[in-house]
Image (cartoon, rainbow, N blue to C red):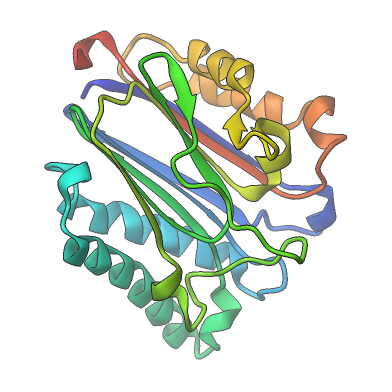
Length: 247
């Protein structure tokens, strides 16, 4: 394992009755790292379960992409997306509920030694650090309606998959739900707020594996006034940093 990583989610005041509709997951394997964030639709009865199902299914299916993410064939990426959709459909069927009841977005990132791949349906975003600069490979969906987006459960989901391939070494990965978009992305310049991501990266330990201290710190950031005063939505952030062992 050559990565250190942390994550946190927080229930927004708009969903004060709970549960939190956001979910994040990640895993490291050698020089490879996978991160995924999902945001269950607030109007969906089982949005939280949908988000959890999406994340777990993406982690499992992404194993097909780990060998060389940026060189993954379109058919392989399609298989991963279908696996995620199928998993949500199976969850809905097991509960005898409409699949729309499990609506969720998805932002998935797979990073290899010198390559990376972003697979996204709906809003939220991923920010990647390459050569000391933070980039947004897939910009969140634009819509004339606030909080309107495409979901994994949408009939046209397969046609609305956004894919970005990065044939460069990625040193830091961050993925987050749309609750943080307006705070950490600049819509005018379509850039990431670098001081924020640099600070988050620097709070990760140099040791490999899950950093509990950094996860607690991330939780405090999401609960801080600068965040809660600017968004009442659920918030979720997962971050991974390549360690010296990954050089």
